[in-house]
Structures are given as C-alpha cells and as structure tokens.
Amino acid sequence: MNLLVIGAISSLVLSSCKKDDEDNEPQTQDPVASFQFEISETNFLEVSFTNFSKNASSYAWDFGDGNTSTEENPVHVYDAAGDYTVKLVAKNSAGSSADFSKAITLTDPDEAYKLLTGDVSKTWKLYREGVSMSLGENPENPGSWWPGLENNGERPCLYYQEFTFYYDGSYEFDDNGMFWGEYGVFDGQWNYEICFEAIPENMINLDGIDVSAWLSGVHSFTYDPSVGTATINGMGAWIGIPKLTTTGETTVPVESTTFNVEITQETGYDLMTVSFNYGDGGYWQIVYVNYSDPSLEPEVVEEEEPYGEDLPDLTPDEMYNTFETPDSYVVLDTARANGATSAANGGMQLTIGVADPAGGATNVAEYYRAGTYQELQFFMDYDIQFDNFTTVSLDVYMPSSNDYSGTLTKDIAIIIGEHSMTEQWWTAHIQYDAAAEVMDEWVTYTFNLDEPTSGPGGYIPSEKNDLDFFAISLAGGGHDAEGTFYIRNFKFE
Image 1 (cartoon, rainbow, N blue to C red):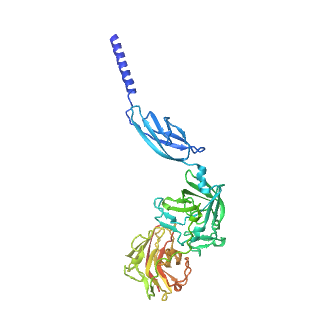
Image 2 (tube, rainbow, N blue to C red):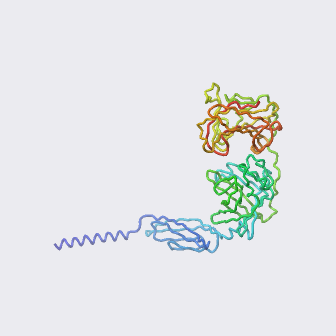
Image 3 (cartoon, rainbow, N blue to C red):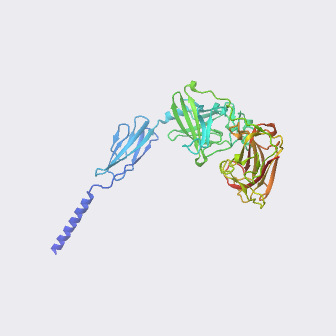
C-alpha cells in the first residue's frame, strides 16, 4: 500500500517538473514588429506610438531624432517640425529580433496655414508656365483625358482671375472683368467656350438659369494642412473651374466645395496644386502660383498662334452617304469618319451594310452609342462650299426597345463645323436638332441649311468658306447610356 502511494507521488513530482521545464523554455516563435502612431491635436510635436508587435518581450525604439526608448508604447515629443524615420526593434527571450520602420512628417499647422494665406493674405493666379489645368483618369495620369490648358492665348481671361485666401478665414474671388464660357455649363449659349464680359446679365447657363453667384465675391474657407484639404463656403464660391464641386460637376452655384491642396515653395514663388478626385468620374488638377518675386511672372498671352491649315475649296453638286456599303457615298466618305468602324469616338460604333430592321431590301448602318462623346464625325479633305445645297436630311430608325427612361434621349442632331484650323471644333459649330416622335419605323428628318437651331457658331453654311466637318448625333450627349439605332441616306441637296 505504501509503495503505491510513493509511486503516485513520484509520478506527480515528475509531471510537475516537466510542466515547469516547458514554461521555462525559450520562446521559439519569431517576433513580428509593427506599430502605428498618432500626432497630438494640441501639440503637433507630440507623437503617441502604439505597439502591435507579436511574440516579443522587449522593444527598442529609435525616433529618428537621436532619441530612443525601451517602453512598449512610448509617447515622444520632438524638438522641431520635420521628416523623421522611426524604427522599432522587437526581440523575444530567445534573442530573435525583427524590425519595422515608418516615416512621419511633423508640420507646424500655423506655418502650413500661412503657406496658403500669408501673414495677412495671399493671392493666387493660374500658373502661366506649362500646363496649368488638366483632366485625367487618376492622379497618376492627370492629363490622360485632356492634356491641359496652357498660357497660349486659348483662354486668356482665366489667367487674370485671382483667388485670395486671408489669414482670418476669408476667401475672395476677383474675375477682373472677364469670365470663361465653360463646357458643360454654357453649352448652346452665345457665351459658350469664349471669354466674355463678367456681368450678371451674361451669366446664364445652358438651362437658362442665372449663375451670376460665380462672379467676383467674398466668401469664407477652412483649411486642414495635416490632411491637405480645404473647403470654401458661401453660395457661388469656387476654385479651379466653377462647375467643380466636392462630389462632381454642376451647372449651378453651390454652397460649399471641398478640394485637395498641395503647396510647394520654389525660389521666388510658391505653387499650389488644387485637385478634385472623382474616382471613375476623372481627376481634375489645377496649378496656381503666388510670386514673392513679381519679376518672374510671365505676361498673359492674349491671342493664339494660328492652328492647322487652310484646306482647298470644293463646291460639290452631290454630297451623300447611304451607308448601304462602305463605298456608297459621294464626298461623305466613312473612311474619314471618326468611329466609323470601331468604338474610337468615346463609345460610338457604326456598322455599315446591316439588314434593314424594317425588312427593306437595301442595307443600312447600325449606330451604337455609349459614352459621353458619341457623334459619328466626318472629317473632310476640303472646305465645302454650299453653293449647290439648301437642305440636309437623314433617315433614322429609332427602336422602342431602347431604354429611354433615364438619360438616353430621342434627340437627333446634324452638326456642321470647322476642324482643320480650329483645335476644338465644338467651340464654333452649328447644329440642326429634332426629337423623334415615331418609333420602330423609318423617318426622314430634313433641315433648312439657313435655319440652324443651336450651336455657338451663329452662322449659316452659305456665309462660310471654311466648313470641313460634319457629325451625326443620336440620343443626346453628356451621358454614357447605351442605345442601338439605324441610319441611312445622309444627304445634302
């Protein structure tokens, strides 16, 4: 009996010793070093570090300014603003270690604020060297959609406008007497895509709405340099382009707009890059300048250098395209049409020689649209003289199967303009407009050439000798809704 007790005790002692030995064994898992930091809201030099390391029992911090710590979660106060690289070494009891580094930037918020406002105020104007404004897919491709605006006489009024930020939180815009008729805002008005006098009676947008709140005025702003964003407040306050807002583009003034700000100091001047990032909607970037040395500021270029070339004149007796085959045309060659056989024009695709959807014996063209810039565009090799023509017509088959409940419209437009000597044909074109009322059958739309219905050009073709561009637009522009249509017999008579 006693032997059994002794054996049990021995077994218990051996088991206990084994467990103690296991507890005292060195850690075998390798450490992982990691941390996050937070800058104090009341003292920009004070930084709190939170240790997220694993499998470690001791820590060594190097704060990048000559100071160190062995605390697990230290709080460190730096002596000055600047860029620092903080390193944490995490070690386990077995002597294994891992390290992790992170860069931090400490900025005096008042000094950063004064980069925008100066001690009292600071006035910014569009930078007159290189690209000052662009639109792209994202910050990595800021000019992929629109290469950008330069001080080349194309929009001189924009380079005179002034944007002043005051230290007391006031924000002032001065148009200096001129305004720009921005695309998407003033379309179809007389002041579209031109510089015009900045007076209230001229500030009417494409919907007939008064947008004079965008003219010179005093507003307010807030600025958070730690995250690089600013907000301007007050009806009509804007920067960059009037139509740019916090979440997207507008055609009317808004109460508040937030944007990104980055300011860099150069010799004799400061640059301020303002940006609006709309994700899939694009990335706008605008560069402003403030000169401490005014002698460095270039003059505004008032007139553009001549663009392109004058094409030879052609006075045709016939001009048409039936779209029955790739060769069934006179003058209006689809081989010279942007988007004629592929989706090259922002989503427009034309397929020539398809079966008539109404069952006719003659082939026609299928017109598929999707994308903001959806016109079927014809670029001529000649300046067309309209001596022998008085009308233009087009046969359109508009299927009821398209979804017209959203942005897709039943609009039909024929466009005439000039491209060889105008970098942007849409700044001076004329347009003939109609709206389909009959669906699922062919309808001929005929227009008198002397009676254009819209467009900024304000002329009639017989008065001009430099027109070399034509386009067909179906279902409206400015949206990416999809729709399939059919066309035939695009004719001038």
